Image (cartoon, rainbow, N blue to C red; front, top):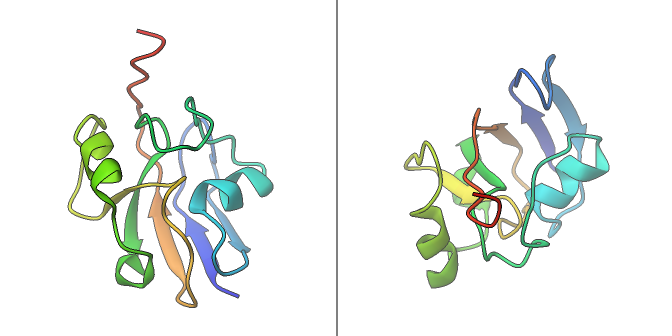
Length: 110
């Protein structure tokens, strides 16, 4: 079971967090299960970029990016080389360190 380390975020995880999550679970589900209220405006179907995270450690262990996820990531605020939509990124055996961006772009709201 991989361990996820979440870096401190002023609103969602002021002190950061460390928790275990089962393999094949999405990063978004793992965050939500551990009381980190990650925005996921599209209902976790990969149709927005509100659940964008930056994977600082363990990126290569995640499932492969799909074309749709790549297209949605292009709309994310603060895109980085190791960005993923947390609803589409599935855990493997390797531990992860993730950063939650300070802002999200919710085109449905704006």
